[in-house]
Length: 516
Image 1 (tube, one colour):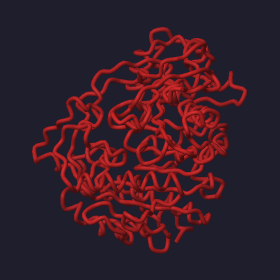
Image 2: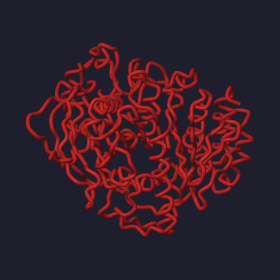
Image 3: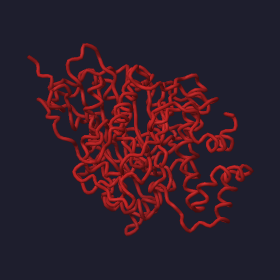
Image 4: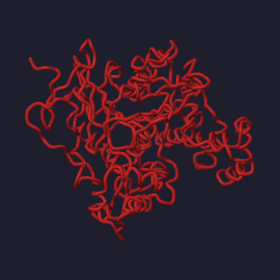
């Protein structure tokens, strides 16, 4: 009898392990989907993995991609962990005993495209796989390793392109799954990509990239789009040159070659990220190949991937995520409003009067947060509906306990006003989507468990059919730009018309007047 833990891919055999005591879900850890991007392959598009002989053990997660260690970072602290440039691996949770190919869900983690990794308890795919999907989590290059654009790198590229290597890693993972996921019981013709924060903006960017055409069939975005203005350095070349010049400050070269860039050691690259301010603008760049144009233009013209979407955000995204300028005075706040909203600034000030009563800095942060998050996700959904594509929008108001989401062994966070005093913070939805509450020693309630069952149920049902609705869950109406029907995730779990509608309507009037 053939072991269900052994599978044969195009590159060789793998042997995984059991993810659960009942032996209903298999897990394959550390599966290579590309060659190690080291040496001559550093700062280059990913290459297909090499074949191997015999049976490769797939029972150990890979190292995280190179990044800063993360300490004292609210819920996003990661401590110290193994990291390597050799990090292009994915992990697969696959149910047994299925008589037909299963939908595939491919997860891209967040972390500002500078941190994070796919193989933590938070993203364990067992619970989702139990609901009848094959769940995949992907590591991708981060920081300058994944997104450095530089004239010397563009010059050596046959596409005249540099940067966006982290997006190309995701595309390589999707190509690998197209060719191999059937060996794990997955349906290559029913793939849903999903992600949160930087992972969500990656989902959005992949929808705008011609290189990902046909590789996925549905998309879920949580708390970040890619439709914001690209800024003055859209292709990232200026920031890339500044980072490299900073890294080579002790050994300057007039025009450093690509070979010289590949010789810079990892810690020096990390140091240069901070000292050059490289990460202050979008890590994703308009490189002319992966992204031929700003994604906002792609979506506005209706050239994005024509797939159903499920999109949303949480109520308190900005808490400890975006800077709070306590020194901002009322005059400077008014200047910010005039610059951002023009002749709508008085109306914007009126609808944010409650926030302004706290402080001008708090009001500015909340406006910026809503513009980037709640409005950004609504705008993304509106673009899809204008193409007559299914779109479902959510807004999470349920307040989770604050805990260290990457550190299951030490999740406790001590907040002065209690564990639920941070509101529905950025990333607070993740543990519910993966239904992994039991992996963290936190004081969960029956309400938390009910929301986890609902969110994981909606997400997997959407992956199966392109519609999150199923008989045992409250009805989730399709989003329409005329009414803004949204699933409000809280107590109760219910459909509402337009959370923060007055605020977001003003943003739409300012930034997308053609959509009115």
